[in-house]
Length: 102
Image 1 (cartoon, rainbow, N blue to C red):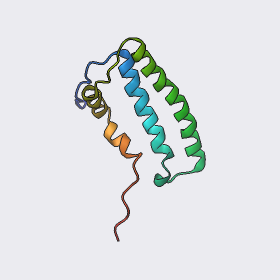
Image 2: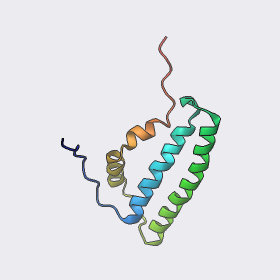
Image 3: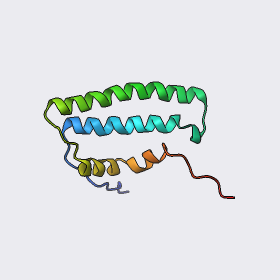
Image 4: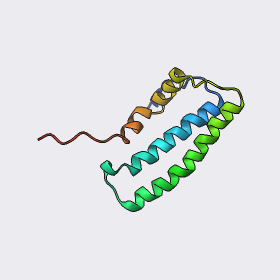
């Protein structure tokens, strides 16, 4: 059986890759906290605790980029990376779901 072929990630610096990874992990935690998605308070609490640590890693990645002189965020390239890494679906978990019809 053949494994699925995913589009290649664009070329990223190590700090950009850490930025994208940390951003997506923070997004995942926000999705778990989303009160419109239900769940239990303990799960939301654990996600909030994880979010705090992911925010530190995200901040550190951006600090490293800044210190290295990477003063621009290349939105088009990073958006391609987010799409390859399923960022659209993951971001959808943060949104408020549509109201039920009726």
